[in-house]
Length: 89
Image (cartoon, rainbow, N blue to C red; front, side, top):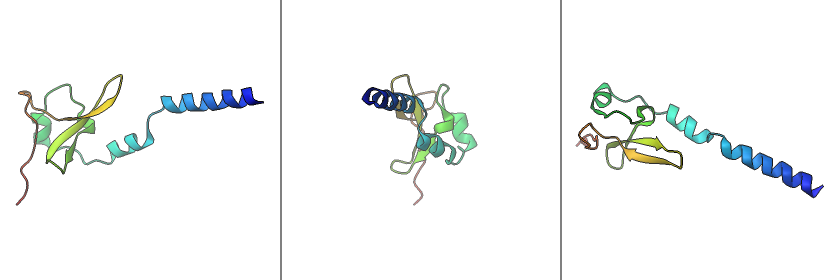
């Protein structure tokens, strides 16, 4: 009895760890699209589908997914500068 329960619990936990987080997939689709000029400025090899404007610093950030972890990185131009907008005064 205990072996069967332990096996079932282990299977459920293992399958749950392999699935995409529901909050991440829902959050990325609810963001507004990037302006055309930002798309033109952005360097290649950045995930523009996950890019968003962060209000704390008024810069664009995107989610970089590597095999180990997913990290927020600043969206950069071809020259390597972060893409930011001026604050409205």
